[in-house]
Image (tube, rainbow, N blue to C red; front, side, top):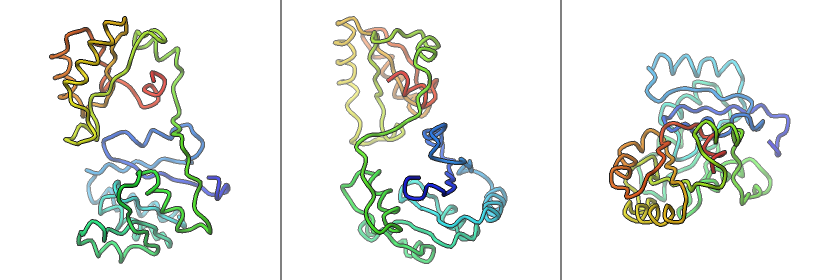
Length: 231
């Protein structure tokens, strides 16, 4: 938005994680277009054919959030500039992606995902983007959110026991550690609030069953904006 203030920015999303709502109300995106990953091929074709009418100039294809139909959809949508990552460093046979791209950006390892996405923008700039050290999320009204979930300001500690959409990952702290932390925090008078999306249900249920103290289970009940307000 800062680089091209007159640009009309569209976000195409549709995976089940709810990330499409992160920028809702921020003013940085003009329109969010939802296309579920499990949509029929007919629906996908109609989606990109309609996108073609918008005469989109540039499509950015991030490495970790673009199923094959999106790559091909950028062609069907008649988008002349297509910027995306190449996967040589992963030793994956994805040569077909090069036939889609007009601007190739080598994927870097041991790099934060935000920087990897900004690498795509750098491909069209004369100098690298400024890397922000803060994350912005449009939050709901705190007082309304706390009242909705029966919470009192500064009286609780929020825990998220899952990571990587509840998949097995080294990013996740052992559940036993969370259980011990919850017991210690409760001993200091804190209410324990569990956050997370519906995909973390099994892990959260395991935590609740094994917890030695009362917990407030909000997993799968909040929007991203409400989570931001709670935090």
